[in-house]
Length: 338
Image (cartoon, rainbow, N blue to C red; front, side):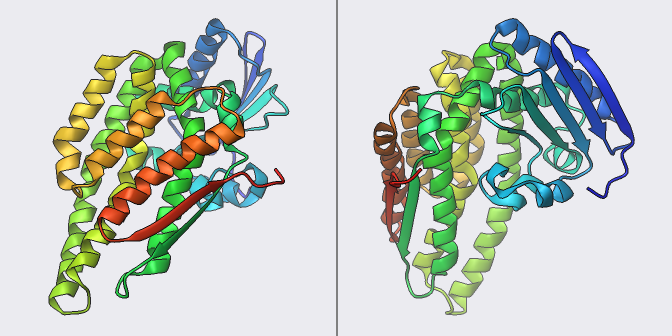
């Protein structure tokens, strides 16, 4: 990978061999210790399948992203992988091994580096992915989505259509995997770490609204100059709000499902107080509708049943943007060959 490896270690945790490779100078031991603790806790909970875990702690993941086969990349491809803080790459056909990558640069950017509880939550989440497989997560991999947008003349149709398509794929197709992964982590003894991690994520979301305010100013200037209609400003801001913040529903719903009502309320109160008032008016009811669908998602749906559920989520998104004057159309399908 063109890296200077500075640390190579081998640890034995019960029946699991933990291999550590790192190219950073300091700070890797805290990650290794957190990883060992997470593995032990999952072992105690039962159902731990891995005999070998490879933990890579790198300054960044860009070189890794270029070498991972396309079939193993997360949604969004190599670019998305390079921006991840932590990711677990695994093969469901080979449950005996997995590969966990930690991205130091992104960890620092998101405020996780040096935060032991956040690191525990991140690692617990990533290890829960292969452990949380069920009928609905398997069915989600067999669905496809087609979204089209009839945009106004001064709206960048291609860009908005691309943003909405990626958002719909995340909220309708990949969401079941994230929901049940978060749920398993919460119910496996990591509720405190997951709450702390999500509190930090909510705080990061609130801080990011400053970028929205700058965009609003630029768009308002274009309206004043006559190069953009006032209605298109609301459309662009709403799509940006949905794309940036609707994914937080995947974090709240697992607390709803697991009976951790106080944790769910803590996160919801922060969002309703600090984030929602700064977003488009349609955002809060859209978020609430998606959160309800996530909280009610059954674990063992057939592909046809999950397609129906996913279409309900898509309809919520479509209704939100149509209320802002954007004619969107989104259809969830089951391709004949999967």
